[in-house]
Image 1 (cartoon, rainbow, N blue to C red):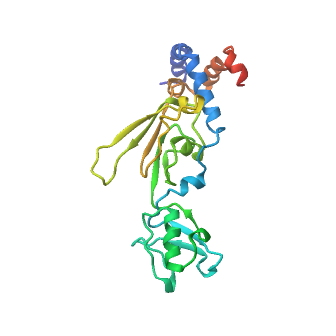
Image 2 (cartoon, rainbow, N blue to C red):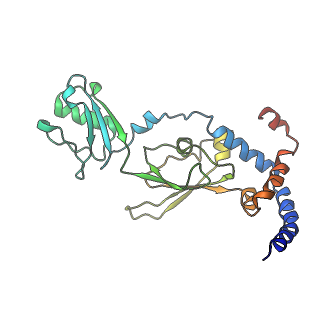
Image 3 (cartoon, helix red, strand yellow):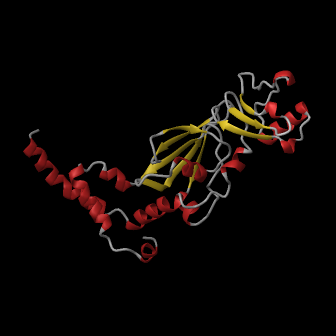
Length: 250
């Protein structure tokens, strides 16, 4: 197709695409923008430290021990394939599958140090992952699982959602790997969680869960528009009169 013919084709198609964009409900656009803006602004009710306390370690995670009374044990330890760490003359206690307070209690028994004087933390989360798909900041990828954080916690940790994300099209797929159960699918209402503080769908994640954030119709349509025409579609949204709510949320 010649350049002139391509230009003529886009001149014919462009009005239809822009008209289609104009029919996307403005309320949906504003809701999406408000969720995107406020998602990163809300502090998580559970800090990363408290979530990590419920994390169950496994090979090849790396933990750090601090024992002021026994500084010879201070340092980094990689959990080996048999689920153990090497404490030298004190043996190789098996810690795989234990939470951090349980590890401190086990090491207390082995070393005679009070569990209150033993600090255990995970330096590198290597053994388990969560998969991200769709309209999240960054590319689709796997990220380290750090304990039973909520969907909101995870999205905040990875940087939030994109401008084209659809807050009402978010799901968690739980594959139940290795436990002979059918996969489960949970709908996550980001609008209710972020804007209404309704935590009912803000589920706690499990290892190897898959988190999917869908794309708005506006974003899908704009992908079909050539770059030189996108400023027109963007102007449609930017020049719309602000609602009362928008005036208080610039």
